[in-house]
Each structure stands twice: as structure tokens, then as C-alpha cells.
Image (cartoon, rainbow, N blue to C red; front, side, top):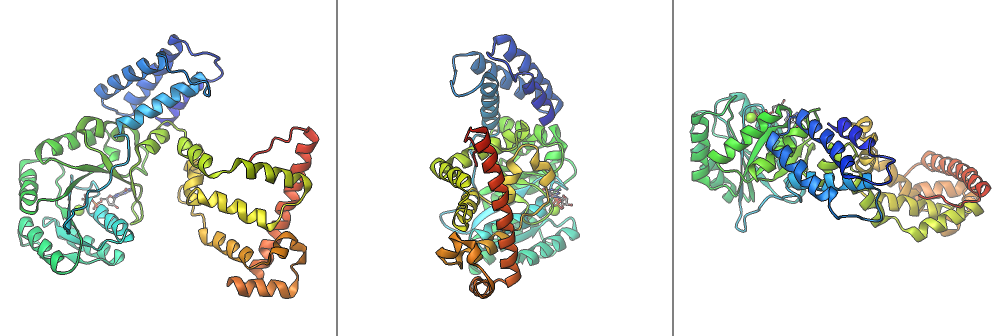
Length: 436
Ligand code: GDP
Ligand code: MG
């Protein structure tokens, strides 16, 4: 989908003004692309009409090119389609908060229980995991393994009890054991049937969950939308967890589900590992679908964090060849303020895919910060001063080794050299325009 849309937008590039015909042509391609991505036909139709009305209308922002304007509008409307803003879990004012998982077999319920427990734990909660899938004995074991990994308790009564009784007993257990969240894993079937719905309805009636999260597999495209619709009508859901977004077919389901059910996607599963569950941000998803990475988020972050004045000062220093460790530290802090580095890199269009799975070692950066922090102001300004005994002192002070300090000094000299060359280049051109 991303490539298709990108193609449609590329055709808009380089046009001075956007005519009604241009908008129509571009939107025809957007429409085809969305349909091909298995987005619900009615959703697409409504969507295109809305964009058309907005794009051909009066909204003309002077700061954008016509193509950017269409992209902006498409992006905004895609975001709106997926529920607009990020939706959070509702926690009970009187704990425990009861979260019930529902979904078809293989959608990712059990895995998501483990992931959610990890996420909530990191937010200071103490979740109890409840094994209420009695049809697949392996499911109980699976949950126990997950519980062990997250280091949170798993409540089970084996596979001989009724899920309703298990869920009820689990809540009493949580109350007497200080578990402020109860996450109930339930059974699934390959297809929706009455027996499954009845069982889920009974559990719902018995424990009155604060949150029923429907887990759906994004790889199943249009089917996922139907599943969501059916579950919502029969059981009533509060939100959706869209799993397997790390796979390829990621457009269709995300786009249609909230539009068809009116229920928000609250979390996205981006892999099999426990840390691969993230709050779902419709705006980020929209730009990802548009193939722009998280460009908009990135621009916003950059605007918020990057100080224009400092950038100019830095440029000045570059030209005068005065770049020091103080500036180095400053720069590093500014970039790090924008968020985890791998996330930032992933937002750059075209880079996201290649970087998938690559971990940026933030600890390396911590080390560098620590080393610079252990330098005196004098040393930061004149790195040439840093010789033998000073190196040892800095290493000791920062909890690193002399080798670490040497490596940083070497890197710094190289950076400086490179910057000097760049500084000379920009001087040569006489433009003085160098940013970031
Ligand atoms: P359940 O039957 O609904 O409980 O599904 P499971 O939790 O057992 O998951 C089924 C399979 O999907 C397992 O192999 C999981 O590892 C896998 N899975 C779940 N969520 C994700 C995800 O977000 N990404 C990927 N790639 N695999 C997932
Ligand atoms: Mg399961």
C-alpha cells in the first residue's frame, strides 16, 4: 500500500498549483491502493469523498506545496479513520481492573496477555494473569511460561473447571494478593460460533470486565474486520489489539476496524517478543501507511526539540573550528531528547524497514555522556589537554576504561576533522547554510 500511495503522490510532485483534476487523479490512485490493500469498500468510498471535499475546497496553507497539502489532508483523514487520538485502557477507580481478552484462535490472545502484563508492570501495576482457556491444555502452560518471564503470577485451576468459575476465583485471588489488574486469557475458536460467544458472554456477566479487548490478527485483512464487527455485536468490546503488524499486510485491517466498529485500536503487536506491544497511535500508523515513515511525528519532535539559535551558533563554531566536547554533549542531548534513538531512526522514511531489528545501543551513548561529564570544563574546551593521567582519571570518574576514553577522543578528533572540512566547504560556497 505504501508504495502505491507514494506513486500517486510522486505524480503530484513538481506541480505548481493543484487543480481539481489533479486531486481527482491522485485520489483515484489512492482509492485503488486502499481497495487493493483490502480496506472495506464502504470505508474507502466515504474516505475518498471526504478528502475530495477538503482538498478541492478552500483550505490553502501558504507554507505548503499543493502536493504536501493533499498528503496532509489524506494523512489527517487516515488518522481520523483509525480513531484520531491514542486510546488508553480504562483503569477501575476501585481495583482490581479487570481486563478480558477475546478473539479467534491464533490471533495472539495469550501472547498479548504476557505482553500487556509486561507493559503494565513497567507502569507500576501488579497484574495477575488468568488462564481461562481450558480447551487447549498447552495454553495454560504457555501462559505460565509467559508469567515466569514477566515475573508476574499466573492463576490457573487446570482444565477441568468452568471458565466462569476460574475467572471469579481469580478475582478473589487478586483482591487478597494485591494484584491491581487481572488479565483474563480466554479460549478462541477457528471461527466464530455460538458456543464460544456464549462462554465469553457468561464470563463477561460474571466478572464485569472494565475492559474487553478484542485481539485480531492484522494479517487476515478484511476477515479481521468482520471478526471485529461480529464480536462487537455479540459481546460488546471496548477496544482492539491489532497483532502481527510486523507482517506485510498492515494497511487494510487497521484502517477499517475502528471505522466499522466505532471502537478504538488500543495496542499494536509488532512481533513475537514480550516487549513488542505498543500503544497504538493512529497518526503514526497513518503516515506509515502513506509510506512517509513517521515523518510528521519526526518533524514535530524536531521542531519541539531543536533550538534554532543553537544551530546557528554551532554553525558559527564549525566555521571557526571551535567545536568542543561541550558542543558535542549538547548536540547529543538534543538528539536524545527526541526519544529513543532506534525509534527516531525508524521514523525516517525508507530507513524504518532496513533498521527493523537493529538495536541502537543506548548504553554506549550513556557511556559517552558519562565520560564527557567526568571531564573538567577546561578539558572539554581543549581536548588536546587530555593525556595519560587525565585519561585514567576520567575513566575512573565515569566508571569506564581508559580504552573507552581513548576511543571517544579518537572519534571526537575524527568528527572535528570532518566538520572542519564541511565548514570549509560551506565557507567556500559562501552560503553559510548548514543545518543540524
Ligand atoms: P491465541 O490462540 O489467540 O492465544 O494466540 P497466541 O497468543 O498463542 O499466538 C499465536 C501465534 O501468533 C504465536 O506463535 C505468537 O507468537 C504469534 N504472535 C502473536 N502476536 C504476534 C505479533 O504481534 N507479531 C508476530 N509476528 N507474531 C505474533
Ligand atoms: Mg491462547
